[in-house]
Length: 196
Image 1 (cartoon, helix red, strand yellow):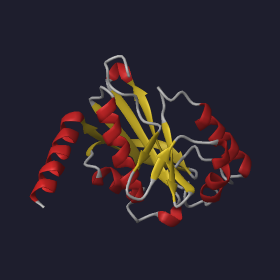
Image 2 (image 1 turned 60 degrees about the vertical axis):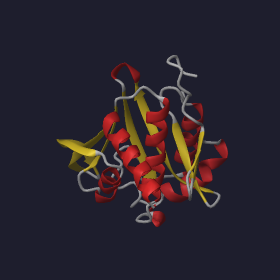
Image 3 (image 1 turned 60 degrees about the horizontal axis):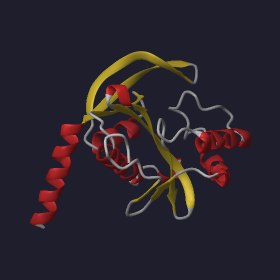
Image 4 (image 1 turned 90 degrees about the vertical axis):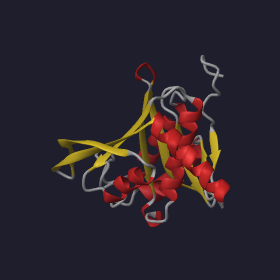
């Protein structure tokens, strides 16, 4: 239990098509398989290019050793392979969590990222005394912005020339979901299930 009596964030979350779980050192090969695709990391400024196996090893080791209570990160497993991740960066003093996510390019457009992100949002609001979950994306990253919209996040603003991507300055678009908005979404889903 957390200090306010809530259960801690679960280390694994099952969705209809995915298993979200803590990273293992053996996940490096799967991470390398999708992260070496330059298109996958095009909108993620800190991703090294070219992406080599050692980068995957370092990344996965960092995820394994990370403090779960401050920055939980779930490997997204699909059909027995790790295909991406969802992570939260918790700011408990502010009642906020910052959300990040990515998925292998060959699985873009199938709703898997939305499924994973939605599950993490639900668990975070259920288990933690958060008032808000925030996320952002480079303005040209239409797919990532669409994920934020599908989980009912509201657009909050643009930070101009906030990142440098492939030698170009890029704007960053920011979205947020307040606890009361999430609660309304959960209540609406319950009503919809009852009326079916």
